[in-house]
Amino acid sequence: MSDYTAIVKWQREAEASFTEGQYSRAHVWQFDGGETVKASAAPSIVPAPWSDPAGVDPEEAFVASLSSCHMLFFLDLAARRGYVIDSYIDAAVGTLAIADTGKQRMTRVVLNPQVSFSGDQHPDQETVGKLHHKAHELCFIANSVNTEVVVNG
Image (tube, rainbow, N blue to C red; front, side, top):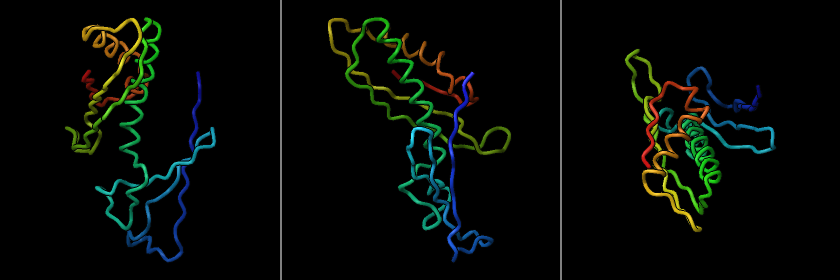
């Protein structure tokens, strides 16, 4: 078993009218390796100036987490089979919608990986599909959520 940590920091600006909802949602995420990431509420949910469009919002982070987990398993599986990958780019898209429960949630995330291979062995499309399927089965982030995760690849 492993534990993972993140520190989330937010500070109210002195002049902010907190109870009126006129306060910044900008904050930072700090990770154990020393990385600090600017974060904020999504501008589509909390409009500027109360959000920071330059910050990563939780919805984007959720999509990136699923995409990253899938990619890391895909890379590992490909390497173990002798395939050399030069690049992996995924323009992943998450959909925030009202679920059957009446609550908003990430109902669907679509991964759109584009993989470039080099070397002596190049997998055919069927093999690439099987690698994506296995990576999806192994991805513990995907296994932790009830969001539909679709892999186009």
